[in-house]
Image (cartoon, rainbow, N blue to C red; front, side, top):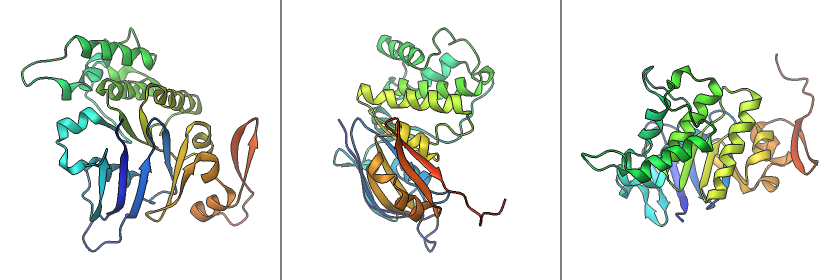
Length: 263
């Protein structure tokens, strides 16, 4: 299994600008669901994009099983690491089946299309997200929750061992947030390594095995979920007081009443 590691990674959007990711060193555990959490602008999404090579690093490195990611060709990288951004769009004519088929492009020969194994992966991906029998439907005709599951099916069809997700439950109602995160977590049972940007600490505590808590471009804490999501860390990172406690064997983060918040 590949091991994804960031070593002293620093990323800026301009040479003289303040780093958005500032000296981050973190190792993502194989076969685990790791959540990146922190306030808006703390560097979570930038870290994901830098790992993928979409943003150049000012310094530091990203390694996959001790191999620098910048030394891996894009086609080969697509076989090993899958990425789902915050926002996803496709033309109205694209069907669910066609979208999922795109996930296997890195395995196709120059003049060939999907093979028997690829088509089996496509069917398995659709079944995993609960969309079997809907391959002929236009993606944009699906509900919001179904569309997000469609994009996850495309990622599954890529068949990469490591999956990076930037706010995978953004804009979804509570029902679909829980359903999709439960689906994502279930992928670890297949040996997948999941790294996802999340905002809700209670969703994070319910589904993530480990948490990387960030603030101002730096890692404040990285450990298992219950060790990282503490009242002290919430105060340091989010600047509010919260009660963090166990209820029915689940970690709960409940903000205390604030009288200094402008509404």
